Image 1 (cartoon, rainbow, N blue to C red):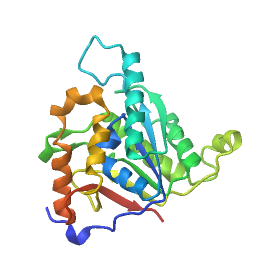
Image 2 (cartoon, rainbow, N blue to C red):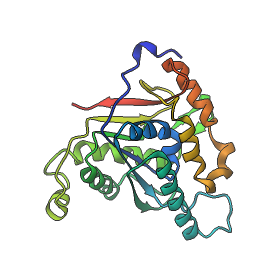
Image 3 (tube, rainbow, N blue to C red):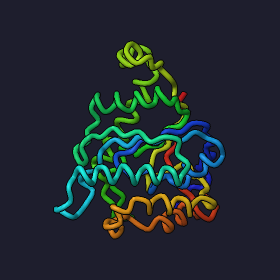
Image 4 (spheres, helix red, strand yellow):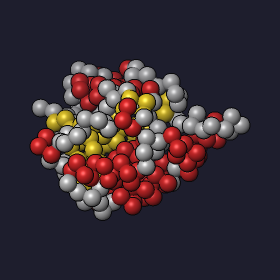
Length: 244
């Protein structure tokens, strides 16, 4: 797999919003990039769509207790990365759908923080055979809903009129979308200086360590693989879409 001739320039955003299904999604997929941009002065925000109450293999765990634990873990991880604020939508874990209500929740946050860059799951990445990885349906739904929120729901003045009428949230344009995709990236971010921060943030999600063996590969291995494609030691990879 050689992508050198196709690599788009690494973005230098001023305001970033990461939209993901679960606490820990963004740390695993984009934690190094978010830490890098925050250290460079960007305002970085996170929106977590589900409560994460089913994220355990222990049937004796109280779902409401786990929900609270995962929110605290996400806040701790955000502090490590330099995230400005975490938003929680609290939809059901494992049952997320790209409904208009979910799209509205994402659009509300976009219109509130007005990012130039959105990071989210690629809804077309349903599996990655080389990494023995089947994507979670919540991930797919979160990506589909986020893309719809970016266009047309945030941009068009007559879309979601209640946000403007009742909450005074003006329409806005998002210039760049970065999608997580293991197989077809066209954009890489050098995270050589922030890989250790990424690992610390991921480790803040202590309730999820039970699933380490289910991950497609180790965080450092993934970063090294993408670094080889990008011509650097460690990197994160995205599908970059610059919107006219």
